[in-house]
Image 1 (cartoon, rainbow, N blue to C red):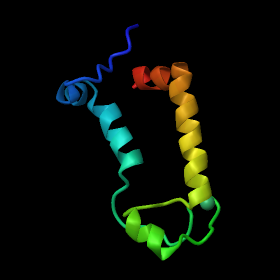
Image 2: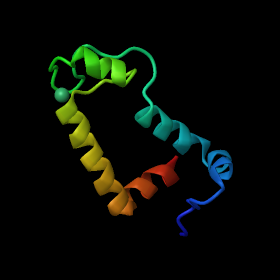
Image 3: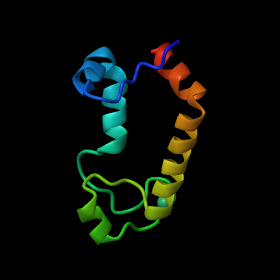
Length: 88
Ligand SMILES: [Zn+2]
């Protein structure tokens, strides 16, 4: 039941303890590969400057901020997030 995320000094432990989650998070937060020229969500063009600034970027500014809003919501209401990760 305890939330297993000790934030100070045990990053490696976290990674070892929940590789699946860590990989998932890393993929979301540090996109890899090519930037998309158009947003994955709304197909709006992504400015080249944004593509360069964020390698592997897949969303336009507005979809990205929507997504980040949703992620904040998810961690504020921790239930959904932890339920998901415990299922795996
Ligand atoms: Zn978009």
